[in-house]
Image 1 (cartoon, rainbow, N blue to C red):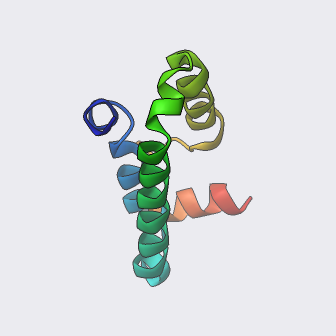
Image 2: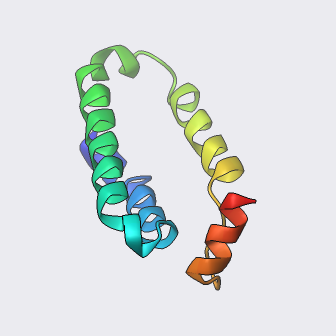
Image 3: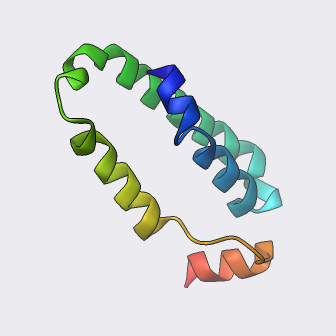
Length: 88
């Protein structure tokens, strides 16, 4: 699981976290995001045998859809522009 996850979607939370959080809450928000990431990794590892019996499309499709719909594009935008888009 960890090997396949590392090749695919592992970097997305770290990249988004470094670009979206404002400086005044970056430490606390980064800690919460890291905790959430590790709890999710533990949950996936704990339920790996059960999830292995499912189709990988049924597992990956919701994650990809979430990224497409909910994660904002950050390329070429300043932190202020990102915050304005998120708060709008």
